[in-house]
Image 1 (spheres, rainbow, N blue to C red):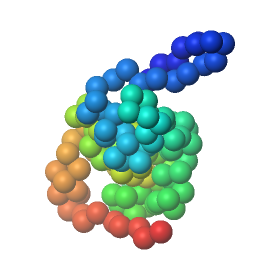
Image 2 (image 1 turned 90 degrees about the horizontal axis):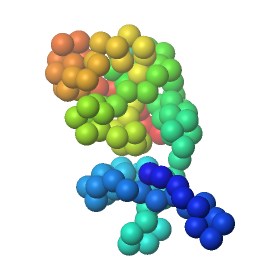
Image 3 (image 1 turned 30 degrees about the vertical axis):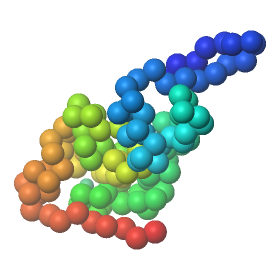
Image 4 (image 1 turned 90 degrees about the vertical axis):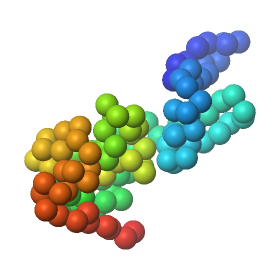
Length: 118
Ligand SMILES: [Zn+2]
């Protein structure tokens, strides 16, 4: 996403792949403005705070107090900062999970995921 000045106005445009744009829209992080323009719905900080509040500051992996955001599909494997792909996590679980697959991580911890209904 970049912005440029056009006719005295700043515009934000997405210059990534179509697949990346689709993923942002499908996972609730962006909306479609028109066929060639999407709009991010949240700043990174707003989205992180929204996820913490959605998950009630509870770690999605151990149930303890969570104050960090973990990408369920790691960024290194194509996961994005979206409401669907992120979960509130405690610092310890976030560090332990690192960029491993979430199911492998939960198997190692011998835990089932915690689901929070909002
Ligand atoms: Zn935890």
